[in-house]
Length: 309
Image (cartoon, rainbow, N blue to C red; front, side, top):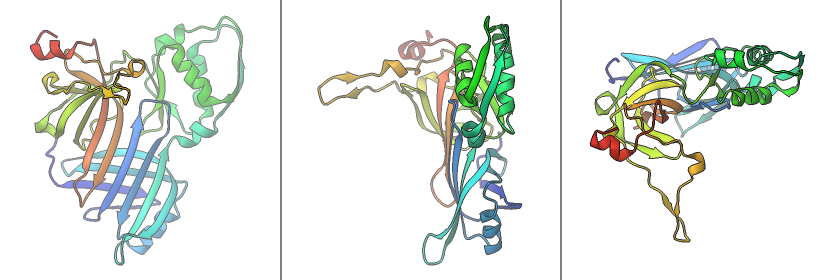
């Protein structure tokens, strides 16, 4: 990984590109749940011609990269849904791009097909994918989908996302989109993740300490475009702060076990299930909020800290 020194970013939209010393403020959220990925990107003091070109690009693709000069990469690619041209004060103009990745196929694709008896989950995945304009196959449990055979005829008529959700659940997984590419993945809880584990500690940009929550292990780090949804990271187990229950007004200790995915991995390997990129090139924020789940096994915090996990 390159040095985390000198922030860098680039926005490409409407046939124009901007970056450099201009101020940008952004918030981008994506998760391994079956939802489109949303972005808000505000650039200050663009040339009027550049701002107008971006305004005219509504409905077209926008790519956004961020990081550092030695380590910058794409963190979002999606369609421009709205552009606001405004002012932050009497002198500073703003061009704010609101974009979403995969929301059009997610919200408009319709399935209308009958499968004969003997069709497989892979047949269904390929068909549903074909109804989603511009969507490509992602990482899927191919063997599980091929093993899923339907003894009777299957009819699909309705929103494709509904049937894709059912299909993913049928193999014990969840369907989700990629935040930098037009791909649809199906990920199971035991998925191996992508890439080699990225070491996350104070030396590589970790801010504060990782904490356990009902939805997984949360950690904040400086922007690193190498870390994507479903990437693997390595955390020092001894740095993880245990879950803190909520005390209710009735004097009870509230732990929502129905959502509890905050187990610990004895090897310190976690898979990223949620990313929020937050940045202000002239302010303090320039980080990623990650939520992760244990990649294999689930030791207790006391075991991990005693070295027995």
